[in-house]
Each structure stands twice: as C-alpha cells, then as structure tokens.
Image (tube, rainbow, N blue to C red):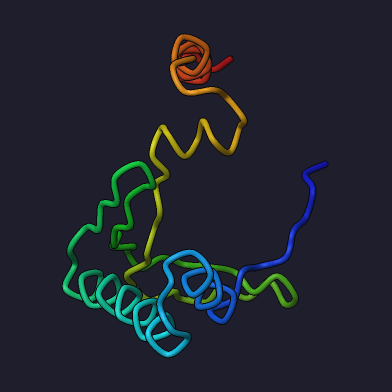
Length: 118
C-alpha cells in the first residue's frame, strides 16, 4: 500500500523559496505567485508548459458523454470540458522511484514490459 503524505501548501512553498533563495518573505511569496500565475495564464490559452527535468502541464479537451449517478442509477449528461494534465519527465520519474540517473536500461525494460501488456 502506498505511503500517504501531506500536501505542500503555498505558504510552505513561500517558506522554501525564502530559506533557499535568500529573498525576503514578501519577495518569496510574490515570486511563487508570479510563477503560478504564469503557468495558469499559459494553460488558459491552451499552451503546454514544459519545465525541463520536471515535467509538462497541458490542457486536454474532454468530449461530452453520458454518465450515471451511482446512487440512483439515472443517466446524466456530462458536458465537454478542458482538464489540466501533468506528465512527469523521465528524470522526475527516476527521482520518485529512487533510481539513480543513468539507469535507463531498467526504466526502458519497464516501459517495454508495460507496452507489451506485462
């Protein structure tokens, strides 16, 4: 079973920037907010945001479909919408899975295995 962890808040991001970048607390919070706003603005316009060694945020169009209320079983139309998806980079996947960089042969084998349905 995966280990659960708490979510990182904006305030914790402000504090991390304050501690590591040497900016004032006010500058740190303004910097984090500026970065988040820029990412949001780009996504609103339908642009993909690619952050090297981190991953990509992109907007995906989901078509309308017919859903079902699980309580009553009544069919309910679900309108078309746009959703934000995140695709982590290979480097981030390695870090999350504690694989040392350069062990791409193992990662490649896992990818081939999953593509083969294994």
